[in-house]
Image: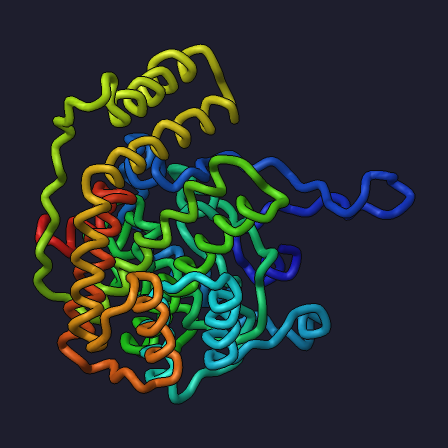
Length: 392
């Protein structure tokens, strides 16, 4: 942050870096900066209406200044890892494989990325999490860049692709940069400061990577819930967001028509109340009573819990037919008649060892149908889902 501030990047002044004699552990004190950090508010707040059209260009200018920082002269090269595009893809793919869950769209995307690595990329300081939600925004524009903890030295186009990733547009798919601006303005701002022309295909590679990277990150969050140290409902729920990232990969790499599954109605007379009615009762209790009687983090977690029960309800009404169709498509694709889980692992293995060609129309159709109908369960309001089914 100190190096970035000296390079003209909007940053708060660091007033004091803690020392062992302070007795407070590691950390620092910085000046207060007024503004908004919540991405959803930044794309919708009336107070930011006038400044929003200027933000994408400001982000481009800011990233150009970050990427111009001399990592040797500042000493940053002594503290930060260097990572090339191939290593970054392989590292992320390895992290996913260690989770032991078969997610064919993730393996498909990893293969695509390794087949489309940038042919030339310069080395620079990469923020690595520059997006809407990690910026302080006021009616004057970008006031500060936050969250530098995963910075590294690598391909600077990673930052431009990441801020364009659909996960961080907060529902505004039409505004590709953070939900507040256009790629043209982002690139124009970058080029005006850096003097370097932006290769659109190069940035698109990193946009695909961004969805791939966050798809794996969501699964890692779910693993934290399973194994510790964080057993909060927030971690479990974030795991289901992997399908949001996977549908973005579908839209970027293998778009096409998809047959949606019609939810089954709950009309059994065997149980009274039915399982869906019990789930609805708990969900409504959380939304209508517990949320009203709580505040802060408890209120937030209550909302997450209620949303998780919505996923359960959609799983009950869509899940059985979704799995039945996935199972049949896998039988047809692989020519085998094993259990669903076994067949999915066989497809994943074929993608990993490259015995399954990426250009197979049957594979693309299967992946589209599986991912799109999965997100119909996990989050049907996600903009990537609406785009995949032609509602955008």
